[in-house]
Image 1 (tube, rainbow, N blue to C red):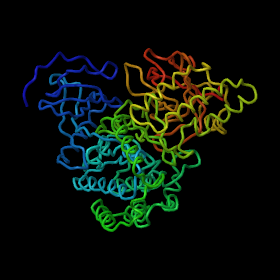
Image 2: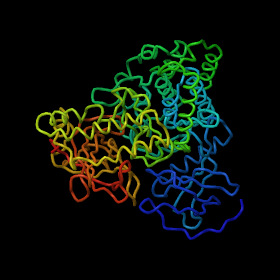
Image 3: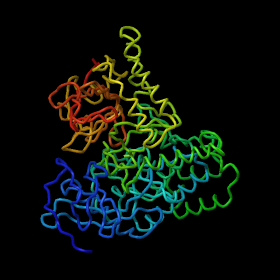
Image 4: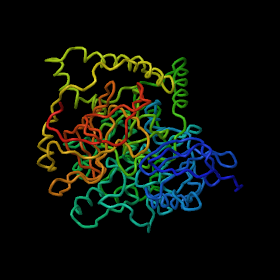
Length: 594
């Protein structure tokens, strides 16, 4: 590799600014920041021959062992495969007194699988092709004795050039003989894709000291079955549990509703393969990815006319409608840009998304590597503005604001005591979204930004009662006291403001213990609810706590800044559609939102 002059090495960390463009790292020159998250920062770099790549820079104190594991997994899979993103190299930087481990990876020009499925008139043939391509990737991965451990839509990109699926992000992967890097019952991953045998192990060993579930081939195949089911039906195999989290009883003991009953356009032969992947016992699934590939190849060899009917939406368009659809798809690709070879799990550390069912609407931002608060899922992100889907998602998949968790009591307050002026912004926002429906890419962002210029009518949210049973759960089940405070994070990024939107969660920093030192909520618990945007501050009300092990609790907590003031001050640079706040804050336990 040709030598390049090395500039002075800045003293960079997660608490400081990113590396400036032009910094030389092992012969690759930094061009731009692609994303930042729990372990470090990802850069777009250009090599000596002009090829672009993604470079993960992980501070040694932040996750050195996991970065080197990802590099070692990459060395086991170092081959040109159309459905795998390659690790191109790794090392320490700077050469003298290293402060970072870097992992250089292939840059994939594409979008997340769920974004692709939503923005196209996807039929059975296309879905089977994408699942087959992921199965081919897993066959190679498993043959190398590697387990991905986080197969989900956020970690599968559909490449723009040929439309094939590419499995990415081995940041939480495992290879045979590797040391355990995490504590607790479960390895990093996303609860909604967790296999029945993993949940069973958790139940049987919850009190066993040092017990840790070791994921295997069957876990990856089960997770792919969940992805398959969601592509066919638009919802999860199992609905939400009683407290809004994973319904573990259903995962362990109930059969998923057959896909053709959810979506009559699903062929029965395809349904049979999907349901076999979701069997309760790993031995009842396919023995491995090779056998799954064979089953899918057999299916593809004898399709019927039903395979060409879009799984959702109307029949295929023709003539002028086809041209309009092509133009919309082209605009969508242009608006998406480059999909990274890393998914939500890496950007978010090892946190995982709260489970929703039906499947929540995907967003374009997740495929271009924006800052993400704790996969995927997929947790899972701090996004300034989310484009409305062209086809409205099911009601159960809406954000907290849309689902009625917070808005129903607000409406009641407006009808009885509040002036009707509070309703006008919501009507204006709905009208604005309707005006923007059908647009994609840059056109959609421009339309949304123009509509969001309406100034807020009120600076604070209205009074609101806590969710039913939340106070009892907090004080009796969790052992918390009303008025108690605890530090939280809106992002793992430090040293600069982070963007938020109305459903951005916060993450509990460290183990939240009671006054008697009992564990109330473990570190990395996600608090979800709703943010309210005032003229000068952002206010937060959180109504659900999702633990890393998949448990869910109703809570009632409000957002404070580090000086105990209610809400967070808007940071310089905030504007409609891009609200910025500091990444660290507090929450306070309350018995009513005042």
